[in-house]
Amino acid sequence: MNAIILSALWGVLMMYTGFATKNTRTVSVVALLGVMAVLVVNWMEYLGVSFFNIDTKGMLAYNGFGLIFNTVVLFSTLVYFLLSGREIEKAGKSPSDLYALIFFILSGISIIAGFKSLLMLFIGIEIISIPLYVLAGSDKSNLKSNEAALKYFLMGSFSTGIMLMGIAFLYGDAGTFYLEGVNAGLGALTPMKAIGMVLLLASMSFKVSAAPFHFWTPDVYDGTPTVFTSFMATIVKSAGFFAFLKLFEAAFGKFQADWQVLMAVVAALTLVIGNITAVFQQSVKRMLSYSSIAQAGFMMLGIFAMNIFAKQGMILYFAAYSIATIGIFAVLSKFKDHSIDAFNGFAKKHPLVAFSMLICILSLAGIPLTAGFFAKYYMLLAVIKDGNFLWLAIVAILCAAVSVYYYFRVVQAMYFKEPSHEEELEFSPSFRFILLGAAIIILVLGIHPDYLTGLL
Amino acid sequence: MHINEILFWFLTALALFSAMMVVFSKNPVHSVLWLIMVFMAITGHYIIMNAQFLAIVNMIVYAGAIMVLFLFVIMFMNLNAESEPQKSKWMKFAAVLSGGSLMLILIAALKDNDGFISSMRGEGSIGLIKNLGKVLFTDYVVPFEISSILFLSAMVGAVVLGKKESSTIVS
Image 1: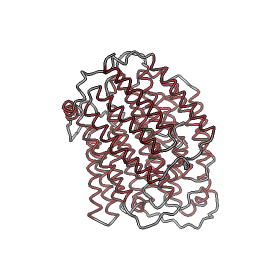
Image 2 (image 1 turned 90 degrees about the horizontal axis):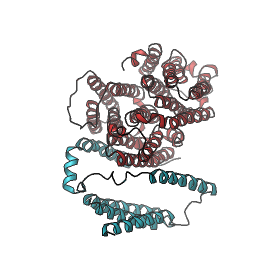
Image 3 (image 1 turned 45 degrees about the vertical axis):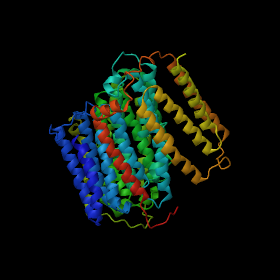
Image 4 (image 1 turned 135 degrees about the horizontal axis):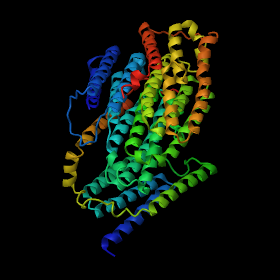
């Protein structure tokens, strides 16, 4: 509750900073302070200090899992602001409004962290989605950005309609919006409940870009200004997965045997399509958007298994994936040319940045000693402990092997090719050290994943 | 047959027929007009269910305001039967196949459901504005207040998108 209210209020404050100062650097600093403050109050709620005691009639309730998730997401946002603050300043005429939208999204994510009712789920998802449509189209003079925003808006509102229809079916069956109410009753899956569940599965799969609902992802991620692609692909996707996990655990946990087949098919399709298509991409930005589909496939494994390993793994996955992707996108957003060739000889010119980026890429590929390895390990462990559908684990391992190929093409370009581009890039010392800090976090989590998973 | 039942079946038939006409009309303006008919029929359903507030809101907001906006946009865009893009035969086939199987599954699942009547809960007075207001400001006050964040963000977004920028569109 602390985080919802503070981030919404800070969003309003951000709008006023646009009037108070024309200096975009000040706006960024205010935003940075804001996300730190939200992080602190969220952590205080975890420690048991709640500033607001509002009777939500049980529609919002926070437990350790939700608050840890929120902390991970807010921390990733902090890293994102630190690394990409300069780019947000350049993205539009008034960065204060864009920051305000990001804070509203954070408020929506905080709702997602604690929803207990389908109504709150819907409001949370909408608060996340609507500002994102705007962020996708914030580069108004670029036709690709316009296209991305329109495509995202149309497809997103369609999936929201499907979600509402699912909620209506569930309400018609259970007579309540509460997740416990949906899960209660007889053990059998009634036809109404089954329809509602499948519709919700489809719309949530859309939000997290799981196949076969992923077709919007490459175009939207490619067209959106790179700074906001970074935000969409990491923080917002984590929130979508958390909502997905929580919905299916709390509302349909009893029917796991019924939906496991569906979830297994979705997970396997996402893994295969994401990884195979990513191999053929020539642009790093497009490759990363397919890689985000591929990573979504791995996170789907956690929802498929839904046991304690899956929960721990999801939290670790959110941290590992978000920080690594934010790091790569932060470097990528300095480039004008997004093709893989643009990275040729990058390590010779900027060894420190290239090294940090190398660690981020290794983490995405799941190489040991990085956080990504343990994230993937936990997901596979969850599937194997679950016992059903062991072929899913084999598919996942094969896809992880495929993913190494396209991730290492960037590494190869950075380290083993001669510089061909004369594009001069400027990396400020603070940027270099923050990126190195992000890489160190990935390494620490890769050696001691229990620092994060132990909190659950 | 009770008068309510006759009205119900009449409105249902009208709503379904109009909804089909929305899809089948070649002229987008006709589609919008048929859509207004759908909303009218659904408004009738709300009145039968004693949900007067919902009926009025549906009438004013959907059939009134939103549909007028729709009409304006369609007239601005100057769409007509000629400018409709041609879809390939396979696309149509795939759409019919997938839509038809979805309908089949929905019907198959719902026809075995005998819980329809029993799941119509409440005494039939919840749709009155007095009761609705009470529920909205007691049980549902938190979602009600939180949705203000949603509207605020939508407004900020509209301003961001609508603000003038000096540069021109380049591809």
